[in-house]
Image (cartoon, rainbow, N blue to C red; front, top):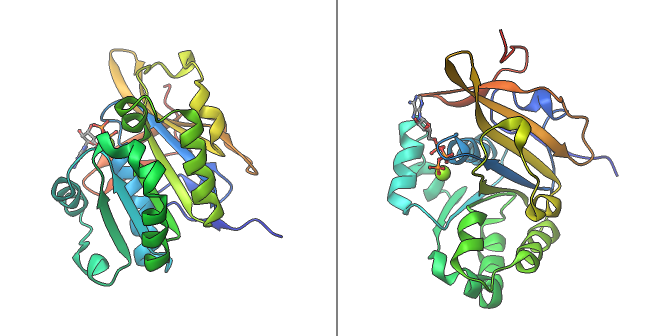
Length: 231
Ligand SMILES: Nc1ncnc2c1ncn2[C@@H]1O[C@H](COP(=O)(O)OP(=O)(O)OP(=O)(O)O)[C@@H](O)[C@H]1O
Ligand SMILES: [Mg+2]
């Protein structure tokens, strides 16, 4: 069966990953604080809901839904219609209940996924999941990854990483669970810093191995694969 790809909705990113995310894959979107993870993930959902006929779900373990809505609106995406039409669903979960989510609520998650017919899912973030309960270990996360894969959802799992230096990144156990990894970080070039993006891993995909510049503007996150971070 031919591999299908989903456009990311992030200008420039598809060129780095052979046209888009592999349908049904689970990708770790990992980065330093404020590097644009949530915004990039929202763009992925909007692209699906608005342009690709793919209903989308945003599951937040962090920010409240009002802040999330405001962030969508800040970038010019009027999400009211999408929410009313059931094309975009925002769900908030208490981080302290993550263990419960996985133990008791997979059924509830399944119910939401089926009701919405979700094709794209974002989980913001799995770092909170890991910290909030010692019960939520790698194995439980693997279970969630498998579950979403089995439902055919293409999922971005947001993950906070403390190491900013892009060539000093230590791979963690969590990295091996996912089909792909996208790293967002910043790099010092001369006397200033630049936001950058790199794709260290994407199964079934020819990836562009370059470190590329990222721009966050009032239109959201864009990457520039033709440009160089180093002058
Ligand atoms: N209109 C804008 N123009 C330029 N940069 C912006 C704009 N709006 C937000 N930003 C920047 O975007 C970043 C926040 O993006 P986002 O919330 O997606 O990051 P994040 O990686 O999810 O952060 P966190 O780790 O706090 O969850 C901040 O660094 C902020 O300065
Ligand atoms: Mg965020």
